[in-house]
Length: 319
Image (cartoon, rainbow, N blue to C red; front, side):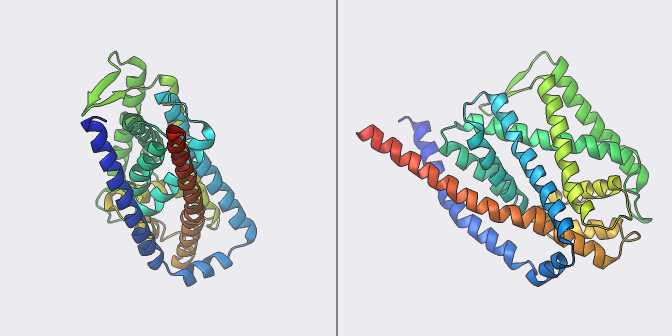
């Protein structure tokens, strides 16, 4: 084994140890900060049909997001089957939402993919393409809504409606620049710190845009389904997009408090505080906590299967 291989092996062992220490600590912190009595009261107040619709839309969103890694499979050309890729991506997304991108999107994805035999360079390309897919969809939706003057901002906010429209224009320009580069760029591959970065085809980039935008739209539909029909869906979508970027900027796991603050500030004239909080608590329970519980079980299964494959490979090599 060469020096690079030994370093990667040591890094994997250190990452595994850190991961098994960090994840339980973050999970405990997340669950400890939740008011479970409040969650129960909020959910009991809804009709079961409303909650069933929210769960169904959430499931569609997670299924769609998991398919981002199938685009990554096509982009990188690796041969892992969809039955291995999809549950892995689902687990990473659920942990990402609740415990931050560093745990879910990065550490967990590197761990699980490497245990399936993918090299670091391939995992990095899958991760990068997924991030671009997510934010390309965000730029297109947010840009279009902001340019149209949504959401209507309360008086006194420093950015103002004109500032929000300018941000919308910038987002649309960036999204268009990516799509045009995928179509017309002559140089399509770069080296960055030893990693190869390649532009996808325009067809793949268009698929990224559609899937990314649809996932954000489904997330907003969950919130919309839990609120009374007083405000149009585009407004709810625009507010969710603003709250999501605020959560990313503050680096708070699951955006605790950020989501509620943005919704209360921007929709205070349309809904009562109690109605908004009940809907957002329901959204957290259905879109964050429920998938996290399922993902925790799926993760344990994936780890067990990976351990079995490792033991089988070792016994095969010594037999």
